[in-house]
Length: 488
Ligand code: GLU
Image (cartoon, rainbow, N blue to C red):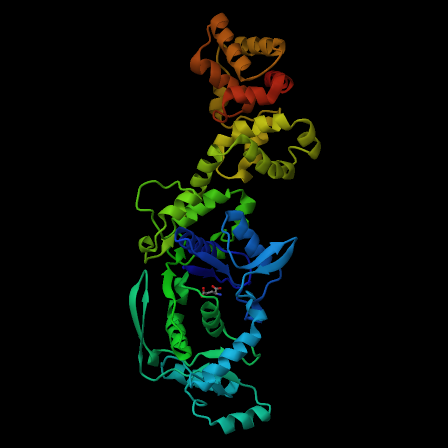
């Protein structure tokens, strides 16, 4: 059975790239009826960020990527579930200790006592000669006795991978095909650091094996590390999982996407008011194509269509405008009820509504959101769009507006409108339509000469939400105020 893992380091927020890795793992596992592990790779204790594990899990939950084993959040606490745990690497140190001993016995790893100064000198020398910087094997052949003596003396050490010399390492990558690397181009990688913690390379191999991972789906930046991992599997006598290295996500200039180019963390997108289904849909298409024209795909459809064979080798460009467009599409398709709920925090924040309004005039808020829903691409645009309902003082967006309101028939239109609005009991979209019909019949003002001036009088803008909805949301008092202000 297929088993995959998403193995983030808790060094900050979940980024778009990490989200895509998690998503592809999830889609692949779900499609094949497999399972997914979430493993926290926190062996670099200097880079830990408080709250990052919780943040990662919350972001995954928000988009709907559900792992089967690993840490979960239960009553605000981290709770691990699954038979292969713990799933947080810093809690697995005894396991690594046991396995590194095995590797030393097999002759695949060795103690290295070289000081930082010596290593620094070596690096400088190699640099001066224009050589690839790697460990020179100084401690490779120390005898067991020598090692014991040095340890007893209290010398600091690391444990390194003992690479076979001048050997071709080969492996297959499902996207990139057959890959060959000579061990001369690799380094005797540190496996256990002087603080006793394993490095990523060692922990990842031990854990993937012990957790029964069948497919490793991860970012392309890990491709150069894979030959070392393949050798570690050989050293242990374990079967290597299958490898898949996903293409980089690039910004519009073709450089690797990073914080400098704007929002990259899932939390930023949540704050801006993206819908989870839009983010998932868009991210799924960053480096993979469904093999048909349809771009709007639900999680279920993505699971059904997903196929590693259709993942690209070359980088995928992150286009925030395309994401916005897709989000707008999902907002338009969502129920007004849901969009109202999601918009309320933004409206509260902007001060346009209060908590009391939510209790006393929820229907009105919903009506307002309904009128704006088709006009926004992200929820954080709601306050800016809603502004027109809260300012009875009209500011014309351009001179054209003023010109239109200088038309001959305008005074007649204003008077007729005032009279009809004032005498209408229940101002709703149908009543608004009827008012326009009557004015048309009675005053002979038609089409563009009728609707555009009214829109401008009420909003100061030539475009915007449906006019009948605007009238309904504004209500009598506000409309009459606005028409009165106009004269001054
Ligand atoms: N901990 C690594 C990361 O943060 C995981 C790499 C892997 O998936 O092997 O990306």
